[in-house]
Length: 88
Image 1 (cartoon, rainbow, N blue to C red):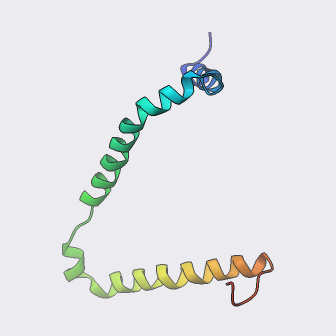
Image 2 (tube, rainbow, N blue to C red):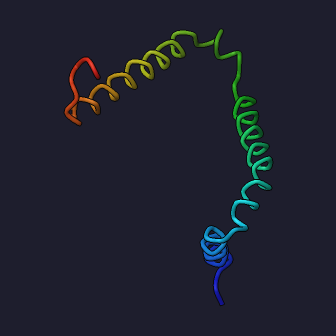
């Protein structure tokens, strides 16, 4: 009378502590890699190249916001942890 998700969780916990865990990891590694490739290919297929021509300014603004915003956020986090400006 336990859900499949809870049963799978307990099975994973038990398997993680046995000698079979390494074998299971080795056997599922190619499958994990295949799903990772499938994920990135499917995300790449969502890209519409027409956006480059139709809305170049919006795309450039989005890229600039991401690059500058990410850099500023990383710098702020480094400074909050007490590191120097040079490290940031």
